[in-house]
Length: 411
Image 1 (cartoon, one colour):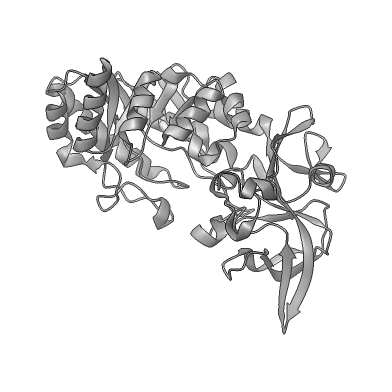
Image 2 (cartoon, one colour):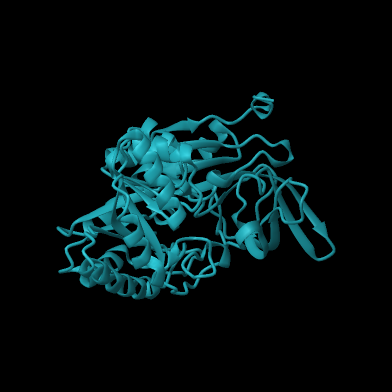
């Protein structure tokens, strides 16, 4: 399960988060193992008997224990760097279920991917295909690869996480795809058998994805008519997640089945790469109130977590609900801010917040994705601990809190 109040305490599987925060310290990330696996299985089950592969997007949260949990559940993995490949393999991920995306792979990363026998390298330019073919030839291997195309479909999301337009750095123009496939066919060391797209992240309206699927299917039929054996269609990320209490997330089953209805009869394996919708709601950032402050009519609640721990509100203007670990009906309109020396160091501005006092714990919701993954040591701040709560309510620290000594390691 996710998180809910039990006898006035915000809990997960019967364990009060207040007890965990007291034992582990703050700030810390807490994740529900059951919620993560349930979300993966929702995607996997929705496909039914249709050929498919659900690849968890490692960039959302690459904690080894989470990767191991998903690998044991049968997940594939979408990676965007050699470092993420290393993490997945170290966690026991199946190399044949790995798709390597990203617009700037190095030759060393390509070599590492091919030597690891990963499932597919998704190329994003003609030059990258040539580079991959060269590395594969040196290794005496045939690289399974895909080409990422830009359907030119506009996604309603933050501009920093929209990725499917011609003005974006990702992929190639749909109109150039056939020429690129024909040029790639000259390389004996590469097998280009996948077409992929990714129009953006945090999509609560999935209609643009359906539009992109239709356009890409037309391209696949044209390529097949030219003799190219296209076996897979990668539709990019999954659905968005609710940010406000009253928001309704897209239904995973409805989304997957709508895609399957479009691809039925096309003899294609469908690959989907959800990240946010697997881990976001399964995670909280728990922080302790340090001070209350008032400046004129303005109220501030100062906590021990900062933008270095969770940068999404500052970077993306993302909304995260704020919950007290001990249920209360008392609220105050205030800014929730951290200790970092930036005016942009905030989690909420001019919002009704729990009327928490110094020493109280607060939870910043929907923080399991792109929370710790984007954390930094800015202002000389050690990164927080991460805790995984099992389905029986037991918990364990799956990443130790950094120390001051960690801050200077390697210098």
